Image 1: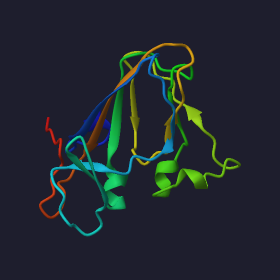
Image 2: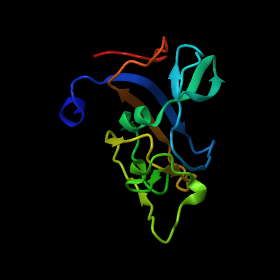
Image 3: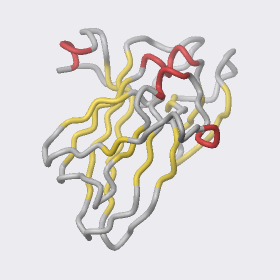
Amino acid sequence: MISENFGNDYFLVKSIYFDKPPASNWFVSYHQDLSIAVNKKEPVSGFTNWTIKKHQFGVQPPLNILENLFTIRIHLDKTDENNGALKVIPKSHTKGIYRPETIDWNIEKEVICDVPKGGLMAMKPLLLHSSSRTTNHQRRRVIHLEFYNKELANNLNWAEKCCF
């Protein structure tokens, strides 16, 4: 699927397991995924907003890197509007850094991404997305995999790079 839709030169750069159980229910407001995980903190032009989470460095790379990332989400449970399916603003990933507080709801329309159990969803991390609390007491588990096709600059490396 990856080679057919994106090309043969992509590799895994980040993996996350999301588990939204009914007893631990939270809301996620609209946002873009603006940081990448790297192996160390290194001053590199265009890389800003450094963080450390769970002993891993995060940084906001230049826009051209964010524009060329893509995510595959593997849904381990049926996901719909009742158990926190992603809500997205279509084509928002084409607008660069698009702050949620600037959304013009007269123009933009949100779409709920229902995905069946075992289904896949592809998206760009720059896509504005959010998720609601679960209302049907059903679990929502997702394996989130991010891919890119180039090495980073100036001695920076992807923290979780994995090739196929």
